[in-house]
Length: 173
Image 1 (cartoon, rainbow, N blue to C red):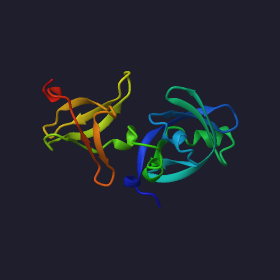
Image 2 (tube, rainbow, N blue to C red):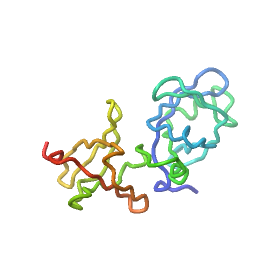
Image 3 (spheres, helix red, strand yellow):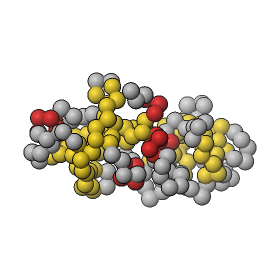
Image 4 (cartoon, rainbow, N blue to C red):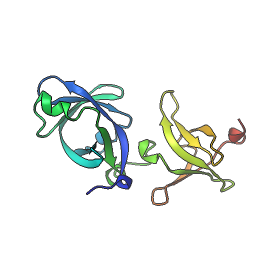
C-alpha cells in the first residue's frame, strides 16, 4: 500500500469528458508526462489507489483529458470526479536534472552563504514568467523566493533541503 510520504500532489480530477470514460484533469505539475508514467495515484475515501493510464492528451496549460484503464462509461468516470491526484516521488526522481515542481513542497530552504534556515516551501507559484517558491518562515511570515536553477546550490532529496545562493538584500524586502 502506498503511503502519503511516498507521493506528492499534482492535481485534481474534474467532470467526465465525452461518453467513453475520459475525465478532465486539472494539473499543477506535468511530471506524469515528463517520465512517461504508466499510472497516477488517486485519493479515494482517504486511500491512495493507483489507476493505470490508457491515454491522455493536453487541452491547454494546466488541463488534460485522461482515460484510465477499465473506466469506460460516464458513470464510472463520474465516480472519480473531485479525486485528488498524486504522483510517486520515486518516479519523479527519474527526470533529468533537478525538478522545480510540486514535489519540493515541504522542503526546507536554507541560505548557502550563512547556513541559515529561511523557511519551509509551502507552494510553487507559476502564475508569472518566473517560478517562485512560496516560503513560510519560522515566524509565520509568507515570502516569495525566485525558484531559479541558477540560484540553487544543492537539492538534498533525502533530507528534504534546498540550499540556495540568495542575492544580497532579497530577504530584506
